[in-house]
Length: 347
Ligand SMILES: NC(=O)c1ccc[n+]([C@@H]2O[C@H](COP(=O)([O-])OP(=O)(O)OC[C@H]3O[C@@H](n4cnc5c(N)ncnc54)[C@H](OP(=O)(O)O)[C@@H]3O)[C@@H](O)[C@H]2O)c1
Image 1 (cartoon, helix red, strand yellow):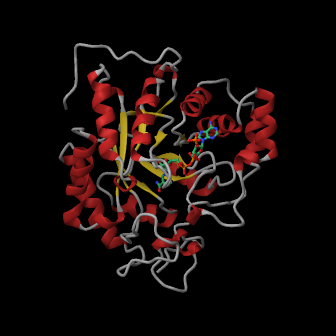
Image 2 (cartoon, protein in one colour):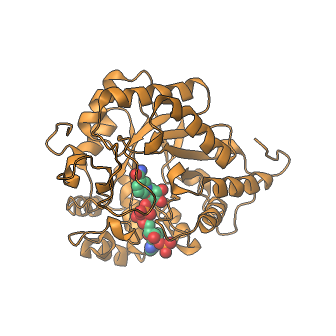
C-alpha cells in the first residue's frame, strides 16, 4: 500500500541479519521465516506496547509476525508497519499472518473479517490467514473459563468446510497467499485434507518442550504442512484463566537449565533453538527488547548437539497450557473433549 520506494530500511546497529534466519519452504514454494514474533498481549501488554515491540523487533531482524483479529491490536500494528514502510522496509520482506476469529465463521463473515484485518494492518494482502479455532464458539475477551457462548456447538465438518470454502475464496481474490489452521487435531485435519481444494499450508499449535505433541507434529509435517508453535517458552505470563495447578514450567526444567548454563544463554534460548532445530516455527512473544533480540539470536546461534536434542525430546510431559475450556459446548464436558484424544471427533 502506502510505502516508500526511495529509501533503504536501516536495521538497528545490533540487529541479526534477517537473511541468516532459517526459512521454511511451504508447498507453494514460498519461504516463511522460521521464527515469528507473537503479538498476543495476554491481557496485560497493551496494544501500544505490542506495536512498539513490532517496530523494535523488525528493526532487529524479525520478518514474521503472528497477528490475529482477536488480539485487539491489529490497527496499532498497522500504524507501526506504515512507519517502517516509510523508513524503507518493503512489504515483500515481511511475512504477516492473521487469523479469523470464532465469531466470523459464517459464510458471509469470512471475507469481510479478512478485509477488516487487512484494513487494520493497512496491507493489501496477508501471507497467511488461519482459522484461529475449529469451533465457531465465541467468548468475550477476558471472560472466565466457565463462560460458554449460548450457541456453542461441537466441531461440525460440514460447517467448517463452508468456512474453508470462503478461506479458499480469499486466496482466489488475491487477499491472502496461503491459508491454514490452528488448534486442530488429526481427525479434523484428516477430513479437511480430504475435502480442501486449497490445502492448509500451516497448522499453528501449542508446542514447547513439556508439550511436544509428537503425533500431531509428525502428521502435520507428513501432510505437507508446516507446524507453527505457540507458547514456545511455556507462556510464563499467560492469563490466570489459562493456569492450572498441574502445569509445569519449561524454562525451569533442570535439563533446559543445564544446557542453558553450558551455553551461557537464558533457558528461553534453548527452548527456541530446540524448536527451530526440531522443525517447527516458534512464535515467542516479548515486548522487552533485550528478550526479543535474544530470542532471534537464539535461532541463528550454534546448533544444539544431538545429545541435547535427545534430552529435550525426553522432557515431554504432555502439559497443555491453552486448554480452551471456553470453547466447550456442553456443561458436563472437560477440556480434553476439545482435543479428540481418543482419535474421534467429540460430538
Ligand atoms: N493460535 C493460537 O490459538 C495461539 C494461542 C496462544 C498464543 N498464540 C501466539 O503465540 C504467541 C506466544 O504465546 P505466549 O505469549 O502465550 O507464550 P510464550 O511466547 O511462550 O511466552 C511469552 C512470555 O515469555 C516472556 N519471554 C519472552 N522472551 C523471553 C526471554 N528471552 N527470557 C525470558 N522471558 C521471555 C515474555 O515476557 P517479556 O515480555 O517480559 O519478555 C512473555 O511474557 C502469542 O503472542 C500469539 O501470537 C497463538
